[in-house]
Structure formats: structure tokens, C-alpha cells
Length: 494
Image (cartoon, rainbow, N blue to C red; front, side, top):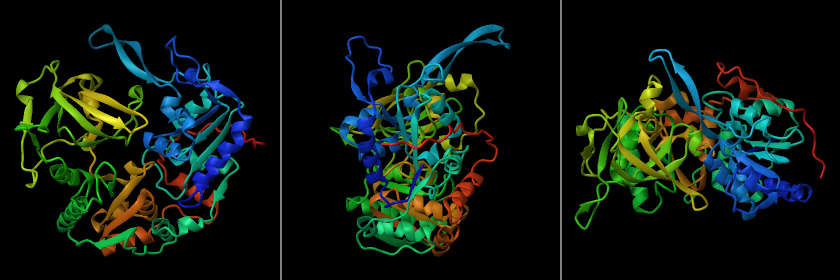
């Protein structure tokens, strides 16, 4: 295990590890590892090193320090395992007939091994045990594994991560020295101040700090105003930057903020007299959601069949009436509003608050509209269609999102909202995680009580790596009793 806090040289060490290993690792045809079945595609040889992470955003961060030739070797764990839909027959007791259902299973398993000799897993603190065990089963017995993570970040909300277990059972190396260049960066310096229980220091260019009123409604109004001013000064672009908040609900939660911000960032536009981003009320099973072309959206769950992971961010590129929808045709609603006037969307059921009570049949039911979202980046963009109730359930607006959803990502500028109305979520680890998402600038908005809570409350305590690893495990979901498969460690000689 390689444990690295911000600014301690993880990128440099990772590059050096790869450089040392590449001369000792055989080459493989990566088209085989990609399950490329097209007959005319020639073999594509590369080193037998697999780079993977839980989320697509973390994969993009892995690519940054690596030579471009290695980018095809970087994938999510689900993509590495070749997750794909399969159909199973089952007997419906109620209707007394046999039916088919689609489930998702890995192609690479204990009986169909991956060809890699080295496996490097980044952001290991996010990897759930079930998925880890599937990865271990699919890797050859002589594989060498390197887990990279930051024990100072937020532990997973649901399920347990493999990182704490591995730290207690495998050789673990901690990068502790903050390099001179990083130490001179106010973002990195303040991240380490936060870990030590010290207040961050203002910096006119890199780390701004603004106060918030104690009332949550007044604080929301000020936050919205700051975002608008930053946008007008080219310091906040919703697709380059991030607004990180502590929770989903309340006046300073992501739901309420998204309802207001979408009206500013994607207000109605006309091109040659034609409205190009009309907002539609979409009926999807028992819920109604509002989207328009140009909206920034985020996935709330994994979709293994389509290689989509929780937290991926995209842009809506089209919305059209679904000809297969069999509900009330009057549900093909269109909403037009003035972007400068608040619109009450409180009666629109947001997917983040949906109770998990829908049946499989409801999730497969056609929605009133078909929405196409573009995900990805310059390296790997893809358009994904949302047409069923189950698909719309996992997508939401993303002009503001929680710190947990930001993990694994990096943004140009990050605006962080800290307020006493969200006090139960605020800890050093929360604030450290939010601050370290920024590459160029942090704008921290807080009231005194909220900031004091975030600085003074430490969840992952301990002076040694072992103490912190135990604390990391104790903070995770106790309902999850799964244990990771951890092969006996064997040090690599290069």
C-alpha cells in the first residue's frame, strides 16, 4: 500500500514505479483484455500493467502523470472486469410464466483470468469489498498489486472499503514529506493545516475566505450571489469548476441549490426565434423530473452495463418525446420560465430523495421522454440514452453536489459551502477532501460555527498508520460484514 496525502509526491512516485516496472513486465495484446471481438482489428501490444480505480473521474486523474501510450490500460474496475449484461430465465409465480431478466456480470472471473502481471489501484479508499473480491478472483495468482490511497479523506458512506484491511495486512509505505513546490501552494498548505486542526490562511489568488450569515436562507442567497459574480468574472464555469456542499437536503443542500442555479446557468435561450433549451417535465414511473438541453447532470449510481459510475458528470444534449411511452400523453409537459426569477420546483420529485421501493417492472417502464447525455472528456467521450424510469432514477442536476460525490475528481476552482445548518456532516476529513479537489483556487464560504466544527472534529484519529487504518475501518458501514480477499504479500524485486 502507498498512502499519500496531498502534496507528498504521489504522482511522482507513481511515475517512477511504472518506469522501474515496465522493463520487467511482458507485453500483452490489450485488445484481448478489452474483449475486442472484431476479427479485423490487429493485436495492440502494451505492457501487462493494469491501472484502475472505482470511478471514471479517478481514472482520468490516473492518466495525467502517465505517458499517453499507457492510457488504454487505465479503466474503471468494472470496465477492467468486462462487466456486461446477460439474460437469465426465471419463473414468475404470480403470472405462472417464465420470464427473462437482465443482470450484469463480469466477463473476467476466476475461470477466465485477466492477462495482467501488475495491477495498480488508485483511490483505493473508495473501492468496495465486493468489487475488490471480484477483481482479485479475476487476476492471475502471480499478479503484483499496489494500492494507492489517502487515509485522510472521507470513508465510504455505504459498505466497507478494502484500504483499511490492506493497510493492516500488507506492507504499507506513507509519503509524509510535503515537497517544496507543494508547500508553497496555499491550497496544499491549508489542506495540511486543516489536518492538524488549524484554521486555513487566506491567500488573495489561491484561497479566498468569505463569511456567511447564520440564517440558512440568507446564507443561500449570498452563496448564489457569489457564484453568479464568480461566473461573470470567468472564475466559475459549471463544467470546469465545482460547488461542494455537505448534504443533499436543507436550504444549503444540493437539491435546493441546483433548483436555483439551473435557472441562472441554463436559462431559456432563443436562436433565430426558436427556444433551444426548453425545460421538460419528464414522467418516469412514479417520479417527475425536470431537465433541459444544456443541463449539467450527475449519475447517482453505477450502471455496469454501460460502464457508467456513480458521480460521473455530463451535459444533456437532447430531449425528445418517447414514442414508446404508454402513460398520459398530457405528461409531455414543457416549462418556460425567466432565468432571473426563482421557479418553484419543490413538487418535482428529485431522484436523490426517491425511496427504494420501486419494482423491477416499474424501473423498466418507458419514460415520457428520451434524454441523451454526453459523458466523458477529450480522451473518451460517449453519449448515453436515458429512456426508462430506472435510468432517470439515477441522474440528477449537478451544479452543486456533495463532498462524497466529488471524491476521485479534480476541478479548476472549487467553491466550498460550510454552514452550521449542516453541522453533523462537518469534520476535518470532510473539509480536507473538499479543499484537495481544487487545482488552482479555493473559495471557502462559511459561518463561524460551521467552520469551527469542520476544524475541530476529527473522525480518523491516530498517530500511526495502523491506528488510522483501524479507525478508518471502524467508521465504515457496520452492517456490511463482508471481508476482503487479501493474498499473502510478496515484495517486488526490480
